[in-house]
Image (tube, rainbow, N blue to C red):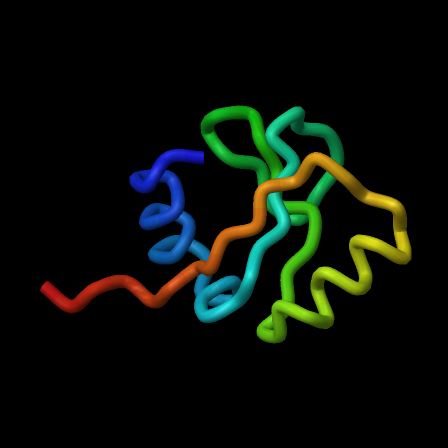
Length: 73
């Protein structure tokens, strides 16, 4: 996931702002599809809660990023 995709996601989907995102770079089913073909498969405001769900669901090989609010211009 590129920095520009993350900024675009932050601007276009306010529900994901200030959340930790689990992204599957291989694509598939998820919450939001990205231009790169990757998908957001889960999100949470608490990193530990997100990671625990991913472990419980045996999801692996994901990228975890924080979706910060867009910078004021």
